[in-house]
Amino acid sequence: MFSDSATDGKRWPGMALRIGVCCALLLVGMLAYLYYPAGDLATFRDADGYLFGRDFANLYAGACAVLDGAAVEELYQPKAYQLWMEQLYDGWYPPHSWSYPPSWLTLIWPACLTDYATAFLLYMTVTALLFVAALRLYAPSNAVTLVLLFSAPAVMSLWAGHNGFLTAALLLAALHWREAHPWRTALCLCVLTIKPHLGLLIPILFMMEGRWALIAKVALCIAGWVMISGLWFGWQAWAEYLTITAGQQMDVLQHWTGPFLAMMVSPYALARQMAWATPWPMLLQVLCSAALLVWYVRLLRRGDREQNTLATAAFAVMIFPYMFAYDALPLLAAALIATQRFVRCVPIVLLAIAEVLLCLQLVGVVTGLSTVGGLRLDVMGCVGALLLVVVVPLALQQREKV
Image 1 (cartoon, helix red, strand yellow):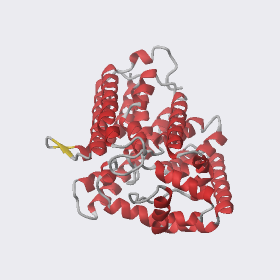
Image 2 (tube, helix red, strand yellow):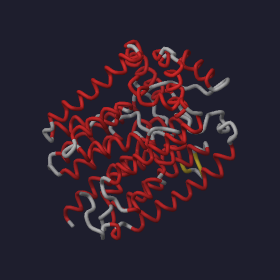
Image 3 (tube, helix red, strand yellow):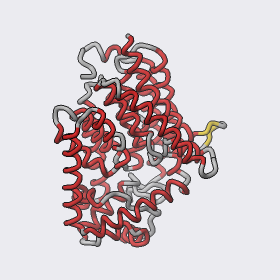
Image 4 (cartoon, one colour):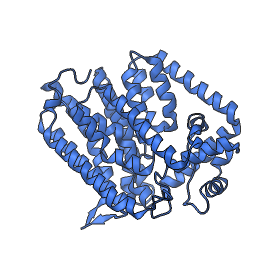
């Protein structure tokens, strides 16, 4: 639907492609030189004591808790969860928190059937392949696929051991299938509830497109998944998730600094990185979210399916404050697809600048540097993500005039 002719790939903007590939090579070399030699491959840990694929340590701990027969509700209790991680990982471990719904455990528990390193490599490989499969539904050129796989959000997802590949695949596939395969869309959106804020715009899209039956199918799938997990793990786990996790994430959002804050891409994070006092960061996020929401609804009123799809994938990333660079894969994918057949200058220049800024953010996160020669690396990702949000509707609008 998005790229029907064999000549589309040849019209791919050369400048953005070259910058994307150069940034990819830079990132691969940087990670190989700076990150892995600083750790210990024998213990699969980095220099800070984290297991490689930092957030995957949470998924693995949750999976092992299920197989061990532990009370799942204790995953949501900070002290009990920290003790479990230290027991599982043989001694002191950097502080972590379990923030996923109990339903996620019904899918990831087999991870503990093997050792951590094998499980991590399998998880990242499978989710990356799912991302490529979802991306190919949009018939992008090979250049687009290559740049996305080696982009800063993709490398950040691998470095952090996060589910960025999976959530991007779920969102992109759900949007593509919403007409022809509604049950597939419902299942994808059901699993996307592991990162529910990425789906905040979905109800608006479906309502404005009149897809009421699809809304019912999604609700049915989610209710079924909640029921299965509640019967499996007990309803106390859901009670703990709903009462404790939200408060924990708000505390993290408001007070955590360091690499955690440097990985974020929301307007809220930008204000915090610039040391704005409370409540100005949240006020900036509210204003930006309101503006993006108005812009999004105006785009939907045009009734163009392609535009609705790409705008939803892009705007979903920036509408909520709790967003990270690895969550930005759908945003970058939408920008690359929107500009794939585009030959005018402005969107391509903005896209290229955004790619560079996201790469600079990754350099800062991995190396621990906040500034280089007076250049603030910690704000680069936020600015780059905001530029990408502008690229998508701008490219689609100008393509209509070509």
